[in-house]
Amino acid sequence: MRGFILKSIRPADVQNFRRLQAAEGYLELEMFEEAAEELHALDPAWFAFDQTLSLQLRVLAGLGQSE
Image 1 (cartoon, rainbow, N blue to C red):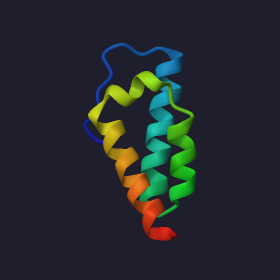
Image 2: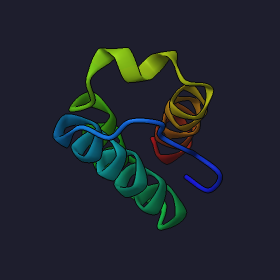
Image 3: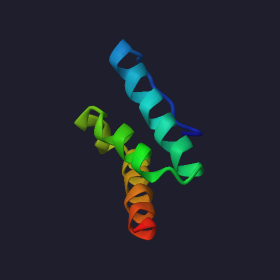
């Protein structure tokens, strides 16, 4: 997630950030199910970020196109 800045980093934050990066990578490769799995594993609090919601919408759109 380009331009995404964390002010304080905890181990759980690092894991969640890696999941977001993985989801973005899967999206670029059009691996929508894998991206959805990464987002599903995120801490629910991370869905308050616009970037996370944007990724989720892109995953849902991709899953809809692949069916």
